[in-house]
Amino acid sequence: MNTATATPKKVRASMMNAIHDLPLLVARDEGFFRDQGLDVEVVKTPGTGQRGADHQALRDNIFSRTMEQLYEQGQCDQFRMCEWGIMKRAVESNVEGGHRPAKIVALGSAMSTFAIVVDPKARIYEPEQLKNRPIAVSPFNGSHFTMLKMLEGFLNRDQIKWVNAGTHEERVKALRNGDIAAVSLMEPWISVAEKEGLRVIIESHSTRSEAAGDELDGPTLRKMFAAEAEAADVIQNDPGKYAHYLVTEAGGLLEPKDVKLSRILNAPPEPYTRERFDHTYNWTVSWGLVPPGATYESTVDNRAWQ
Image 1: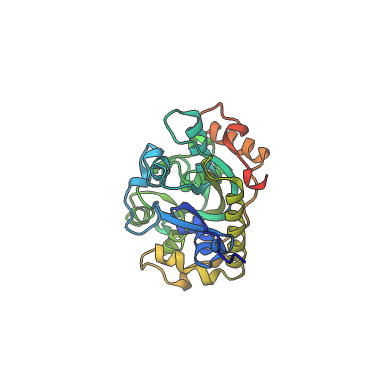
Image 2 (image 1 turned 90 degrees about the vertical axis):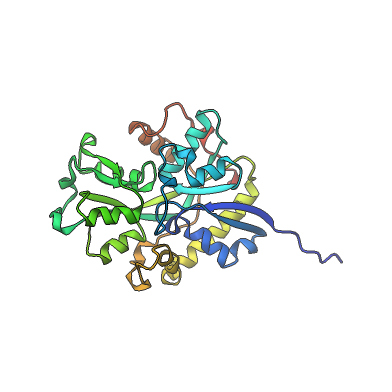
């Protein structure tokens, strides 16, 4: 009898920030990918959330940023970001020439938390007080898109202003120094800000999307998403067990007790529907964040469920 064990399939998946990629990290570290017959290498592509992060993830050309550049060069197979950020990258990689195409392959498993934060000394108590006051974001990333989503229920669009004030760590410092009226932050920097006495005005969970190139086949993606679904379940059953990933990212500014566990929210990946595409794409087009002309067929591929 042949007792040889099949060689696990190698996949390179990139990660930017722990709150975005927690199911990916847990699936790797708890052996859920291995159980699916996969050898998933997590390629670290620092975003703006690590203490001491540089500014490559803030470049105006998104395809020159850390994670996007690695994908462009074929050094990773799969990645995830905020839903609107993935929409922008998937659309532009297919509409514009000269890029490695990427497709949206799932509504992702991490529901990252973002918040708009102010300094209490500024006496800002509600979103309406941010009218025409620039808010620091990471351009074309989750802190940017989610800020727009949160504020357009309170302000006219032409009253919502934003500015690039650097990484999350730099934004917190700029806010504390009085250089900016408000900042948009994700975890663990919301917790850092609260620990330092800063005030959350409004916050929301923001769904991830998953993207991949045509080279990554449907059955492999299905196994990846099954492992991530298992990871989402164990995280939700005991979020405190996995808060250390966020604490590490804050680089000594937090202890586990400082993390608000209700902000750690994850769910199984699922197909990206036409209804979801139409709603999200039309919203990004309306803000001038992506070019018009993309279609569901050119942008989305739910091959993991086929």
